[in-house]
Amino acid sequence: MNWRKWNRWIHRELGFLFFGMTIIYGISGIALNHHAARHWDPGIITHSTTIQYPGTLRKADVDRNTIEKILEITKEKENYKQYYFPSQDHLMIYLKGGHIAVNLQTGSMQVTKIRNRPVFNELNYLHYNKPKKLWTWFSDLYAFGLILIAISGLFLIKGRKSITGRGGILTIIGILIPLVLLIIYLWL
Amino acid sequence: MQRSIFWVIIALLAVSCNQTVKKEGDEPEALKTEKIISATIVEILAAPTDYQDKEVAISGMVTHVCRHGGQKCFIVGEDGETQMRIVPGGGIDEFKVEMEGSTVAFKGIFRVLNSLQSEEHLEEHDSKEHHSEEQSHSTAEKAEYFVEALDFKEITQ
Image 1 (cartoon, each protein chain N blue to C red):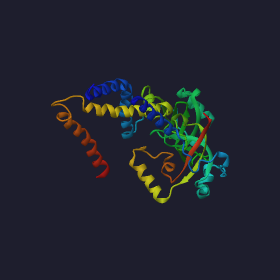
Image 2 (tube, rainbow over the protein chains, first blue to last red):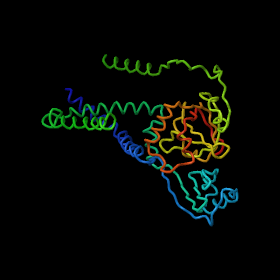
Image 3 (cartoon, helix red, strand yellow):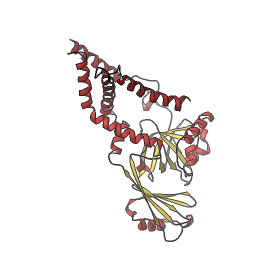
Image 4 (cartoon, one colour):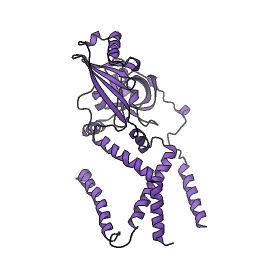
């Protein structure tokens, strides 16, 4: 068997083996990119609704009864944890899976519910290597496999479209793009 | 033959990866003479140099957990106003959003940044997109002091 056959074998077998891992890291990679760029957490979903308290409130008048009334209006009695005043005009009531931010001056109550975003939460768990242990080994193996897939991919074909032709130009472009962006953003 | 050599190399690599290097400061817990100081947030901030780089035990209600990977959280003191920034250290990877509103007891090292580190911390803070409005934890977020948590336990959930 010549080296090209071996090369194709490595590329094909590793491609099949690590298909799932590439999807995991690809999807979570996009999510994490946007996580860093924007104030968006791919792992959680927040949903807010605004409800009006009948009347206005003053910090000095807020007691257990007031809290219970707010919880009754917002139907969050069973989720109550604790409350505190972030400022003179604001009351924060913490709930299991969210919170209620009350503007004491206007009586506006913003109920925010927080829950794990399905799929993304699990993918991020893996991408950040939170499980550690065996996952570290398998993801290291994947990273090594990905390098082999990339290198073997360069030598899959012969001729005009190979690494010595159009393929080579595309490879150089693919190396230059991150390099140029690195120079612009990091060194200039 | 070649296959045998390959497996021998793999086995050697695996063994070498599992070797633990005994580092300075790896003494057993029992040999550590430094005591953990139990203090309130207000007490610590009244005399920060007394607590600097010492192991402290503090507790408070978690007012906010950073949404950027849970790499910091804030607890409010018994005065209901003063907050302390807590960052994960030791074996803690992150703080969960679910901790918000829970009273949590932390054990960790109280750190105070020097002026240069403090400047860098502020620069880093300003370079990232944070809350558009000032929050109740904003002072603690920008402050030169924080606790590097080594362990924590939720007292109330």
